[in-house]
Image (cartoon, rainbow, N blue to C red; front, side, top):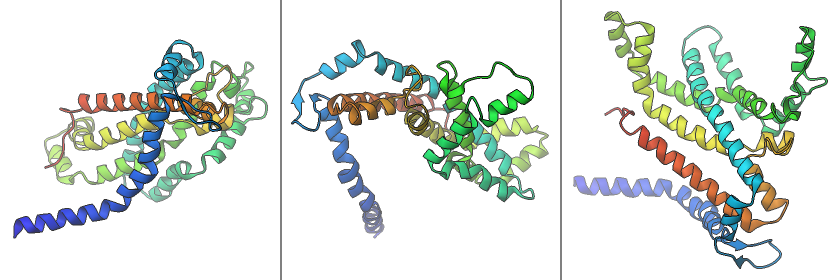
Length: 296
């Protein structure tokens, strides 16, 4: 009887995920497999694909400086954005986890940038960081700064500016996930630590971090993936310039596919993109294997 009950529950579970499973197979799975196959071809939409073996991959790593530049730009961006995103979201979650007056309004204000249209936000940032009339340079001028940065128009400043822009969005979904995790930690653990005389830092290090470790891992993995998928700001604000300093992998794939109409080569770059993200995810999971504590 118990076995029959488990079997029915399993069938019910598969029935619940069936719509997602069908969507994955027909909407994501098909294009996913096609992309890998097209990576071994020369394809421009107008003519049938021509098999070229590893030619796209060989050219990519030996004779494509823009690809190498887009890869290094993406790694640079991710190296700064991931820790800022994860740590910043955790600190904001701790801040809004207090039952203080007006906290609901603060939560809403922090979450709004993450649900605002990406293009609208990009236009706003273009205005804020405009070298001539933008808010930032206007403020710097008012306090006596003379050598004003060019921000998005400067090859040396464009990537740091992109990172600064992304900091505003740390109050989004990641903060909400951390907040849910914080509210799920039993208060009795903090009460026992308080009785034992533990400091706030000790409680954070010995209770909060271990109890949040599965959520930290989740947010870390998704932060790496999101950082590699950066596209909207570089597309809308700089189009990869100046001097390809804001050319990221996804934008490079887009340009190769829809500007140069080189679908085969773009598919090869997309496959490399997938492999890099997969390797980084596996490394994260391996490193965290003995450091993540799951509640029993």
